[in-house]
Length: 326
Length: 227
Image (cartoon, rainbow over all chains, first blue to last red; front, side):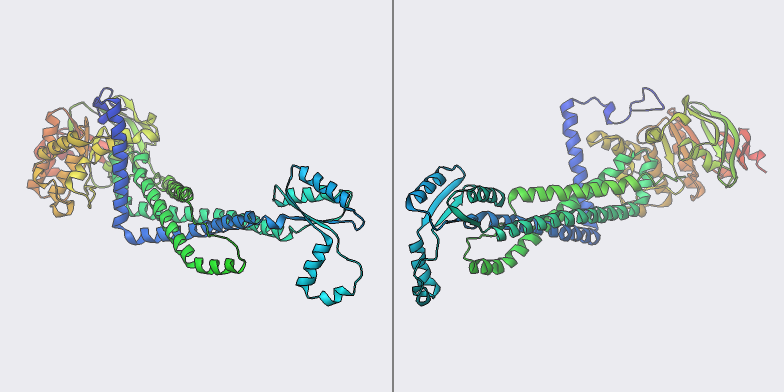
């Protein structure tokens, strides 16, 4: 394309090339530039390493919080015992009424399981386990009510409380109780951690953009003379900025890899502590590491941040360098 | 080919670098631009290469009004003009080959075609054996010739040179001028800014003389007019 001289054949576009050939060359060209940028990073390892380190450490915090949320959610979903509803029946309920209620409960589509505990059975258990055996023998009547344990199908705290409210309305039920307090607290903590993770991630994303942008800005300033020469011989801004964009992408990529490595080391280090805690709770909890898909997202985000950070830097700085030339 | 019409360039602060300059360089013509330093030679070249824009007046290249060239089009205009600089403006940490190939790479050349053109350009300036050298291992005259090879590698119709012999001894200057003459003979328009009066006198080409921003002489016998 020549603006001044119509018909002047310039550039490779003037040479006839097939569409396929041009398509291949396009990618070859980009690959070459990407590799050139990689070499450039290799040439200035100190500043590049520093930037990659900042990136890696910055991204580690949100990723750690994400893993925390993921593992806490696993805990709250594995605990379905907690969402068991105890129905304490009225003292004057007779056996037919109880059988009627149990049949009703079993027919309820929201109920997974029904278990009846007779009051005399409950008293025997209580006498045996509580240590009040002697004192209880002085009481003539059994003070305990019949109890029906109901396991809801949907164990989420919202669904369980809804079921609790309806069961409370049953005719023979004196009191219905659901121990979801700690489950609710856990849910609240999980959502709090998630909120914190999002806030921290947003802040750190801004920090990462600034760090990458500043690194690229310094690289541009270091190459000011070279950029000037390129402008003098007719390089467009987009041509000049392309290697810097690739540099940003590489920085992001290596930052993401570093984050992954730090995360793995962190998990390995915490594993013992977590196992000993969960053993105390006799839980079948297993620590969930970063999945392959999550690693993919992490790298995608890191590369995206590197790209955007460098884009911000080149937009500002490259057009400002003017050929002073002559 | 190159036409100035009443071009004035003044900088903020009131300094007038060029004052109503008009001239016309024909297609295939070779001319010198001379005058003391500060007379406006560099400013004039900057207006052609769109490093600066005129305050008033118009510059035409091949009939195209440069004031109509947008900022984004400037790089494409520069690809049609071969520019040679007094301080060479080479990329010091790249080989001679890379330096000369730069305009071609920018235009998207690659492979054999590019290598062929780079070698042809280096051959014309007599530096084919230095293709793998880094610029700082070359002498001043050789560096200048690398600059010339880079300027002509994509065969521009117009060649501008700013003090191309500035730091060279007379013999080397003569060599460089011979290179320019050779390009001129194949139809390239050449404009050379120089204050080397003895060289101009020997070459006997059309000479445009600037003094304090005004064109005081436009003709063959410039050396007599300059003080």
